[in-house]
Length: 260
Ligand SMILES: Cc1ncc(COP(=O)(O)O)c(C=O)c1O
Figure 1 (cartoon, rainbow, N blue to C red):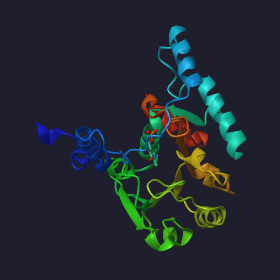
Figure 2 (figure 1 turned 90 degrees about the vertical axis):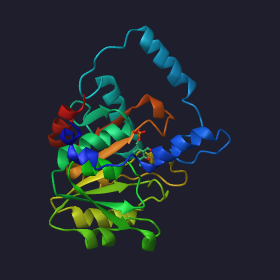
Figure 3 (figure 1 turned 180 degrees about the vertical axis):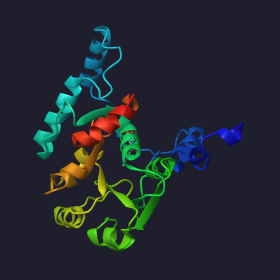
Figure 4 (figure 1 turned 90 degrees about the horizontal axis):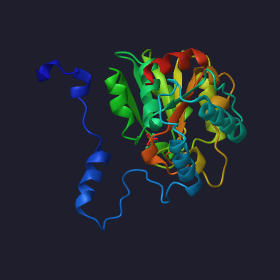
């Protein structure tokens, strides 16, 4: 009955990162630079609080969007750190890692045949999720712009089918950030267009000499942007699987249905 399995899934390959990481099991002395695992353990105060929470029986089902205390904390974090306001009640969803956040975001906005513009080289997790929705990843070679997806490159790849521009900043695997001036140009280019932006900000706390800026903070952008973030990299909690989306309520309402 294999022919009955979902055709878009059958076409996908297991991520190259995972394949390579699995190979490393046989080489215990190798230095693993494949998956983005921070070089410090989850901080002690977080581990202690988690043990306390289990002892208090915080172990049951939660609302689809996550517990309100956590959504509140995320809202305050984004307000204080990056000056962006999102309502905990209807603009934040807590997900299974940033991967879960990407999954519900892409499933909410994509459909068969539409296109997603993203920079190459790209984090390998993006393309399979886009293809699972039957959509087409439009990979833009960023070698000529020092690995930054610029407004000019985006404009060259726009088509009638473009549904979304996926902006990772800071960008995995190349480590570049999209500077303020370039973000302004991207915002100006996309402001009047019916195109969503997914802003993957999972590395926002790993910028050391500048301050992170989200595309959502530019004029006219917040109502069409889904911000992706989480605690995997900032708090070294990769195995805890906690991510989140920040998006206007009309998008959040739909994403929440997919989050269970
Ligand atoms: C750019 C990027 N986005 C998303 C993710 C997924 O993060 P998570 O482990 O929280 O699912 C990763 C993980 O390496 C990543 O590098």
